[in-house]
Amino acid sequence: MPPAATITSPDTQTSPTTFLWLDLTRACTLNCKHCYNHSGPAGDHGTMSLDDWLTVIDAAAALGVRTVQFIGGEPTLYPALPDLVDRALGLDLDVEVFTNLVYVTTRTWKIFGQPGVRIATSYYSSVPAEHEQVTGPRGSHTRTRGNIIKAIQLGVPLRVGLIDTGTADVDAARAELLSLGVTNIRVDKVRAFGRAAAGDATAGPCGNCGLGRAAVGPDGRITPCIMTDRDGGNVLDTPLAELLSGQRWRDAVGSVPRPRTAGDVCNPDSDTPPCGPTKPEPDPNAC
Image (cartoon, rainbow, N blue to C red; front, side):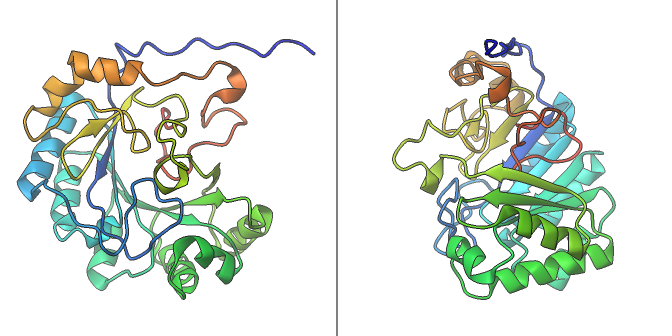
């Protein structure tokens, strides 16, 4: 058997940040067993104010960020989400809202329907009981499925991350989504981070964390990815541009173990599964 192909890792010192996760809240209507940041009904919106988030969005646009993804928790529970989306769109940023699609109000559909906004959601099984074994509340499968259908009917750009938990028929779930009219489906495995880490918070990263992307959490802390806890500083005490050009950020990005072989790369252009829960279209750098 020929040796595994080796790869050359991108330069962690010079990769410009073009994609930014804005992790708004730890509040969520679900209580998923594998949640990367332990969100749930008891979560809160952290210490970042509306003005703090607006400042981050302004700074991101000035730095050359092209895409922001609002995520949580459930980002639609953040009261000022419309203001944040409007600011991002006004700066010509592409916007994705990663939502569980369980409770979608009229106001939220208006957000989703704006030009330049797309949405993403996670799906676990075509069998309601299997889906809800992950998400928690009974009825969540029916609600998410129904709102997937509504999004398609309304023409809202939609991406579904089909998560292989090892307990459901992924092919059957994909077939169901296709039958509903979903055309953008990404399959991914559960990442070993947060509730899924089994005590090992360093096991989850795919290896491309921080390469063209960064995350800002509800406490203002920046990390190379929403699924790593490597600390690059805090926007509540230091401007985003200064953080992303600083040594602490370079150290955080440089500490991420990189893929050793081509088969380990989390790359949407390869045959390996992309990081479905976090990958926006058309960002070429998504993990």
